[in-house]
Amino acid sequence: MHDPANSLLFDLIKRRSVTPDDAGCQDLIAARLADLGFVSETMVFGDVTNLWARRGSGAPLFCFAGHTDVVPPGDLGEWQSDPFEPDIRDGHVYGRGSADMKSGLAAMVVAVERFLADHPGHPGSIAFLITSDEEGRARDGTLKVIETLQARDEKIDWCVIGEPSSHAELGDVVRIGRRGSLSGMLEVRGVQGHVAYPQLADNPIRRFAPVLAELHGIVWDEGNDYFPPTSFQVVNIQSGVGAPNVTPAQLSARFNFRYSTEWDHHRLKERVHVILDAHDIDYQLDWHLSGEPFLTPPGKLIDAVSQAVKEQTGRAPELSTGGGTSDGRFISPAGADVVELGPISASIHKINERVKLDDVGTLASMYQRVLELLLASS
Ligand SMILES: [Zn+2]
Image 1: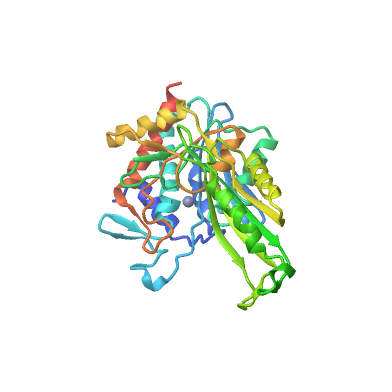
Image 2: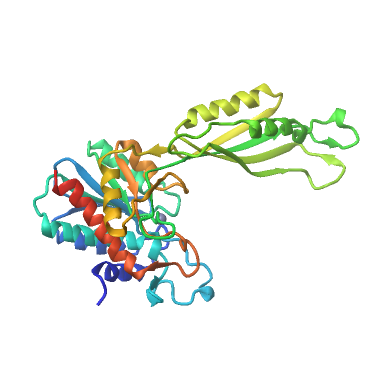
């Protein structure tokens, strides 16, 4: 017999929830939660289905968050088993979403079932915020649910996200924040001309080169206790008309900041514009903000998660702010403490994605312990 968390994981993998399709995963979870006394609301925005389920009305409000959508499987011929048929080999469960992040979802549900069996009248409330739009545009998912909750003054105090945070072993790393991500799309305009008559043209490559050097020369910050130094990277530059004797009329460049809490996007943008304006160039710059940096300060949530991990593994987790963005960027600004704790991330988004069979039940035990530490002993 499998651990109940694994059984639920298998049922979730079988639902082909390629982003943003939920494929019935949320109905399955909502049915389990209804049996426990949760009141579920399905929030549909665009083509995205979200689930907000809450049990209790008092504070503090503890929330489990996650996503049911998965990235496409890729070349089916390269998979050793059907990505939507859970397959057990060498102590692992294989399937798309097994690590990112259906095992996290399964562990949360089972953790709450066990916690409520022991503490049916606990103080505070428990909620689930589940979206099917994390791997896609992330516009109609967690962001919109949080806006809805804010509009009716419903506030999350503590949030655990089941994203795959672990490196080599379950619980070795938990995320307590994320860097911000800001992209710039720059266009520099000049005048096209014959390469032999530069005085009659205005080459945007020549004008942009010193700007690029200056941007690369800046030490944006030294990082701080929780974040590595802010990084500026150019990801694309395009110019030229294709002929060797013509200088181009325009240049486009795309760059990205991964930034620490030493900055916010307003100040970063301002700094870049000051540099551009100091050079004599004709430009247009469009920005895209993926998320501001966030950090959960030391406190009850981090203590509880650290202790729960330590009890299961014998070691306290590393508290990290590394990695890409997550939906924590939407939940944290609403005033919640947010920690990400989930399985090993090594295979996520890859062919033959997998999770260790034993880790799913252990993760459920960790989540259950977090609930006990925060809601049973207060
Ligand atoms: Zn994920």
